Length: 200
Image (tube, rainbow, N blue to C red; front, side, top):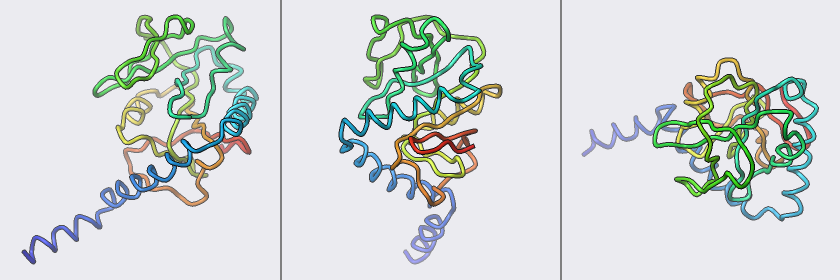
């Protein structure tokens, strides 16, 4: 029993085990804050982030932009869809068991709730190059690290997108002043945008 206890203590101090536990604890706190965010503040902060995205040279040059459909009070970037309709190709992720597929957005009438209750485009898979990816997350820090929901889907997907610029987007309270826990498998952002600033 003593030997087993010593092994458990050793495992608990392994960096990736410790990071996983710290991430889980931070997710609980941030998710609760996000769900309690007043609608007015959520709308104002979403609009501020959209404005910052529009100022990015990377967005202005991009022909293809991947974003996400907001659920559970996530930051909402859908204003870009209407403002730049016909000027850019917008893409949405479709999450499968072990991977992410990308499909073009062709209007709300082509969206249908998928596996996790998230609206997904009912369009063919996009096989081309993605110029800019707007990445959601539970938390970010000023070193451009990201904590997602824990499935690892985005990290695996982003690691394959060698040509795309990856921009994390978040509410002000999701940007942590201290360095958040991360491991070698966690994909670092090229930029992070919150309502008050853009971190490059």
